Amino acid sequence: MHSKKAVIITVAVLLCSTTGAFSQEESVIWGSWYSPGNVIFSARGAYETPSGYSGGLGIYPGAEVILHKYGFEDVAPIDIGVAARGHFGIGADNALDNSLSAGVGGVATFHLGFRGLDFLDPGILGKLEYFAELGLGFDIIKYNENDSALRFVSMTGFNYFLNPSFAVSAGYNQWGNISGGFLGVQLKIGPTPKVDSTQFEADIRTSGRIMMTQMYVSQFYAIYWYAFAAGGFYFDDSTYEVGQGTVWSLTSSDENEEIRLERALLSIEDDGSKWWRVAFSREGDRLVYEYHIAPDYQLLKMRFKDVSENKVGEYEFTKETDEAEYESSDVEPITPEDYAEYKAGTERIKVAGDTYECDVLKHTYSSDSDEWNYTWWASQDVPGSLVKFYWELNNGEDWMQGELIEITRGNRPELK
Image: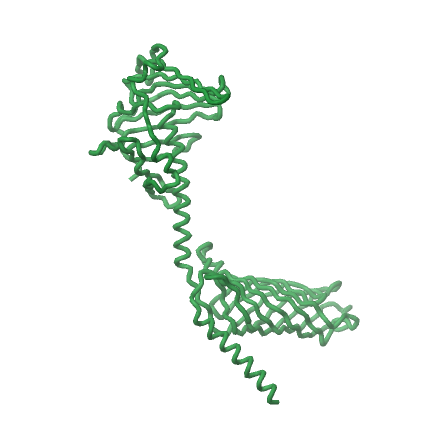
């Protein structure tokens, strides 16, 4: 008698101390609805079928104790427990020896909660949990006398918590050769652990913004270099006036569709730095960026349209950025003083209704077994000094050509 009392007192002390210890833990960012020591009462109703017979009804009452919570740092969504489970069945097949069955069993339980992940769904996932039970049962009354009384028992399904103590259930059960789907309810007694994912959600949003910004930065560099050195080299841009822009048509060996490239000078600051806009259009899509660049061609700042948040984003170029090699690259534009080195003649070219006297410049560059041939048509009478270009690699293995098709005026910032 004394030993039985000692066991009861020991178990009670352990349950109370476990529950108390958990109640003092800090909140986690991803957790469950259970604390060690919680007691759960449940009842499940099933439409089930003994193997080889017509369906019947089953009732599964149970009582469970949560023994342990598994977690790592600020993540603790897994709970392990034990449960006593009963089974009462009503068979609907006249071929059964008995129309009733009854049994008891013991199972190990597993719970996986999703509290704290509510930001991934419209308020549903955080209230949901997956559970599984596995163990043995013993039938006191059997549908068929020849059946084994010892039963393999398994149940799996989902609980949806209507509040921290009460949940509805749905799942699939197997009690020996009896199986079927069930619906049920459960009542939890005991404290609910703290879950606070506010900072985690903020970090996720911040990380998402950083990743999106890096995507825009990478996209900007591709478009920037297209506009910056569309002919393979950079030509002097001092011929642009504020508000003036150029529109280019580009074709290449890699593209089936025409590419439209826009560049416009938006402003010149007191320190000589400039704000430019570049836009890239292909197959109906138009990507727009505006960038601030120093007199020595160091990139300072870039603006972009953040479609995910439907607002204008901004990015500052610093020495610490991943693209510092671009930001700090030396630029020496080709100027009219350099033309003598490349000049191969002159040619008149008509652009947007105007005809320009152009210097034809040629240059060949070789590296290992590759050879690039460049031809430019340049005129100081157009913004950017370039009217047309063509370059090819290894006698046409790869090529690109571009032509100025429009000179625009009155350009203003689009991204504010």
